[in-house]
Image (cartoon, rainbow, N blue to C red; front, side):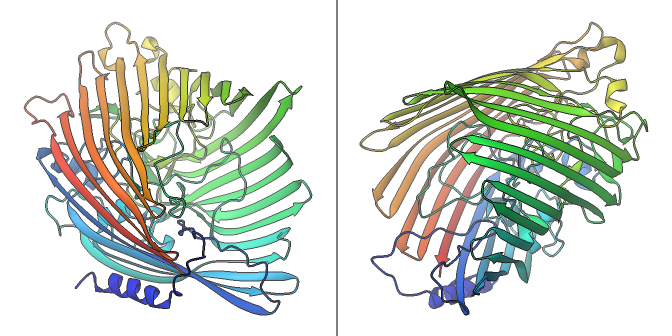
Length: 637
């Protein structure tokens, strides 16, 4: 009976739907925070309504020793160790793979008042979750914002868990809330929003909304650093946005080519703590690739100190199964970032982009007060297109003191964050204020990219070479704001510089029988160690690829069949191999459109994991298998 409320919601929305219209075109499905399209032809003084809903069922089963997450799981769950288990996690998305059944559903209703000089609207949401809280939180559509543990909501009662059988992490929750509202002039030159919203404009090297932690239901597995456009999807089944919305107020003003956006909003934070963003951005867009922008972003935190694996926080490094990891707490952070960006044409020969960022940072509860320094970000690139081919060359420098605020999500995240996992962020489930791809913090170097678009065969390829700017030593690492993304600290008298190489290749063949895609990425990370310090040595690779075929059986049915593989191999904080683990996965799925207002997704994935997680003798290999089924129904009114 626990599925009854979800089924009732689906039935209610289906009954409210208008009859199918054979002449109607495809209608987009809701995103994480739906934004209603303005009805330009509505009569002044009238009120119109729009509604959309979805119901998602998730069923997952796992088997094998690796489902226990040992030996790190007990201390990780209790918050007494920074070493996250290597298993049981999906290596492609980072989402936990735990047995259980879950259903989550949401209904969004948007009434809009159409005035003579302005329009006013509000979005009301109803959300319901039942069953496995882990599976609902990480494998369904992004939960209704007031219900989401990622934002800090306690309604669902979610907590880090490693269940071995269905039913061990079950829970239920229901929320009804006004999600957002806005008032805008008829020409939308002035708009004020409140509640949950996405920014209208931002430069990602100054501020990027927190990345989505859940695995969005889709028809294919895609590497995190893919050069493609995402998994295959029908035009009437858009995927949810890959970021979490902000919560606060936002003012947008446009005059001719200029746009000003002013924002004051809260960010995800742990219970008892807080994080607030105050931001302004000014853009002049001439169109056709010529755009200039200025942005200032300030973030402050307060409340209870938060746990972190950053060396400059107050704490004591711990010897773990994954090496010597820092572990402490920090609070009272103040971060301000200034950014300038210009995109323009160079004498009609090529397109250029120049970006410069400058940040200042300070915090309370740090190991060495008063040692912080400003940090800078530099990026310059050239792009040239000839026919179907486009080539680009970019240089980057992201200094170790740039944009280094420590911001955890709203719950202790049960996500893959083992010390050598890639891509990862500072060994823990923090989000960074900026987009750290392709260049991470404390890295400088270059990236070359080639694209061949259009035609029966398309190809994208890139190569990047980044090196550490400053070594992370026990002295450097304790200076306020100093961060290195993946290397652990070294003794001052044995410092070495590490290097990272990124490789990526994506190709699609539009054959008569199907679209066939091959998607491959690999990161190679290396740091030599001084004699007598073997724990400083790092040398490992993380190759991953996926290949799949997708085909439109009819204009209303898209199917996909594919295979994916992810492996990690090498040495981390050791001179002998202690990283050797991989995932193989087969998947199949379909998106079906039953009417202009209803559509369905079904996908099945079967994964097999093998290798070893630690260098401890006598610990069995964390091998396990897992099967995932997702069924989702969308309704648009």
